[in-house]
Length: 272
Length: 269
Image 1: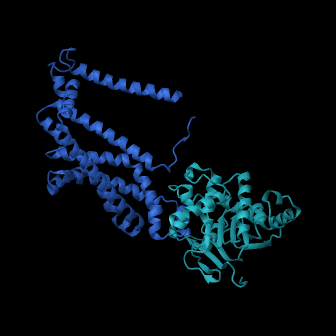
Image 2: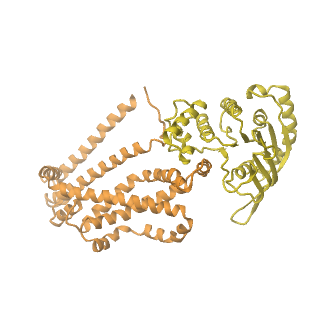
Image 3: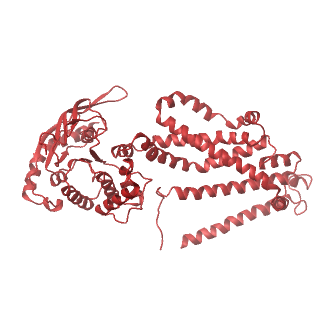
């Protein structure tokens, strides 16, 4: 009972904090409300930091005119494709390498090298290879997602309890059944644990790719606005991206809750 | 029944482990163990004497360095398909419900789903878990998980049941309940059982025969005792009978020295 009240008041405080931040932003960037603190010209603050009312008006404008939907759709599509392809390939390669130690030890230094490379620099090359359309952004997202999933699957397969494995074998599991009923479920629990990370990085791949060169997408919108020093639109783009990143994260949490019912959660009791 | 073919025969088994730095450790040396069809044999010995190793050999999970294993007269190649194994530690699949865990062996054998589920429900009821089938292992208590594991093994109707200290993690009351249930299940349909334990009382109250292993390394049987206590038995009550106490005293005399030896070795490691 008391915990519910705390969480409710916590929610209120969180909303108030957000409102306070926006109020501060508004006051500090408004040309006439307070005398300029740092800049010599009262309009300079608004030029560098935008104005929250203008930013919100821009977002409203985008959604009411419908002009944002095309860009948002492209970005989300790139995110989804990067996530699906990256996860599937990470799962396949992770299982393969975890179950064949020879291949794993052969490829080990290369995997380490590719993983430690700052893979965002691949974006220009992908642009050359796959053009300025969606494919180059998906490719960038895939390289980011792949390694997260790959390492988690690899870990997941190796962490399978030897007793569980021996038990499944004694109960008559063939090699294929071991893969399907023991290795894959164990690996999947690790993949789900990294789901938040990989969805986030798929989103990063899409936006960064668009920002570096594209003709559609939210990253492209931001790039265009920056080119004309339209700071309000830049901030509007950032806010829209943040909002959708939060929505994606929330969707992942829902999926996780549904699929991971078998995992123990801390202090799982219910008050009547 | 053929008197000539024991259910399980370990013949002059030696197991030597080689670690990465070429250090050798002989866990078991020259051990012979014969289990007749329908016989309940317990193997007792101090901790670290290679009891589990012996069971893994019988299950075919481990190949002996020397010696041979025969199952109903046939030399064992690979896994022992006639045996069910009840492990000492958690071996249930955590992502499957209790019912799905019980039927997993049938599923591996390609049994029709509906058929398997019906058998699974029946087995859950037999081990006293009716209505708990939809729960996941982490939602069950330690004793309940043991029952699920028991049902999971017995549903496949193995001719030989290998048990590695299956009740050692349970509290004493749950443990005696489980022991009685095990005896009941076993006497309904007598299989050969190899029961590993470090608890001599448990061994005597359950078994037809108790084999005492020496302390490791290179452990080997140092005594065999027929347990002629009448069946059916109640494990809690039989402990108080004079015959039980007499057997216990005799076996303990053999075991005591080995237990002390094992303890000294662990202390000096």
